[in-house]
Image 1 (cartoon, rainbow, N blue to C red):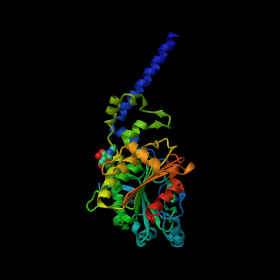
Image 2: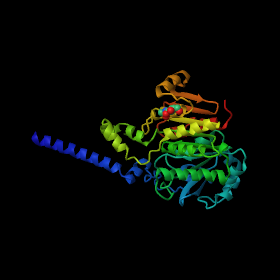
Image 3: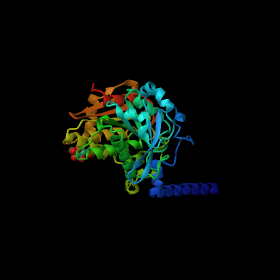
Image 4: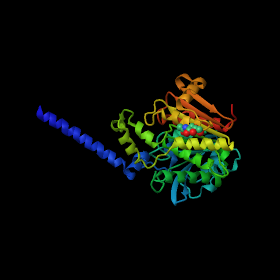
Length: 390
Ligand SMILES: *[C@@H]1O[C@H](CO)[C@@H](O)[C@H](O)[C@H]1NC(C)=O
């Protein structure tokens, strides 16, 4: 009996010590970077990214190439041709050599993007972990261009420290990578901002809003055709407090009950990725400058990586920024109840319109954290941003 008690107290003690150790480790920036960005996890299991056919693409549908980031990092990127254009130019595409190219500008696929004055480009910001070829990202690229298969090209890349890109990730570094990719799109194939849509998922949504804010605050302001955020988060400190392993074990649950300790630990978070502030600043700038803007937030209720409840908070910060005197979360909630469209098993939609912008929130019943990316809801979100407003 006595030994049992002793044994129990040792294991509890050991578990507590391990837990405190884990928390201590989380305050170090290198470990934090690995937890936030998961860049060491490639998830492509030794598959060669230079052979996109492995990931289900047609021969020479994808052109792998590099984009230079200003502080001398090299970013690995894919240009993906939509299926209609591929079909039209299949014969000539097949005569070109395949795989990685040093100079993308002499490729037919690139010229099809550059030379068509109506071509559209989706710049893609992926989430934490993996590479351009991981998981649901490939079905995602196909969904993005499905609505206009003769027009919509996709440009996707790995942030520094991910996949074949050099360096190691940080908030500031990743944002400068994203800006370098956008600059590439505007300067090399010379796609104007009105023909650029930015799509993102998970951590990528934070990158997306950082880019949106950066350009909207420029003088003169630059505003793109639209920004799509799938499974966004309010910011990293909020995510940390709501994060559960596999949706069941809240890592910081035990200390979340002690606000002072919790706030102290949160103060160690280096890269905060404050989407709530950036989206508000972007919306405020667009409204002040009378710029047309389009924002769509998509989140599935069965997402257990980032709880869907982050999205109404992000939406609130965006909507609040359209109002001179602002609005509380609860006031907006009452307002939403009046204008919400119920789509049954598909979920519900709220659209907030001003004379300049449309801020749309789609809460889906199904789609998890990533399956949603390959679904028609994504194709439609892109179409809404480039087509005439219906
Ligand atoms: C909402 O907008 C108002 C007016 O611009 C501002 O004072 C307030 O801080 C905003 N609220 C939040 C939570 O950002």
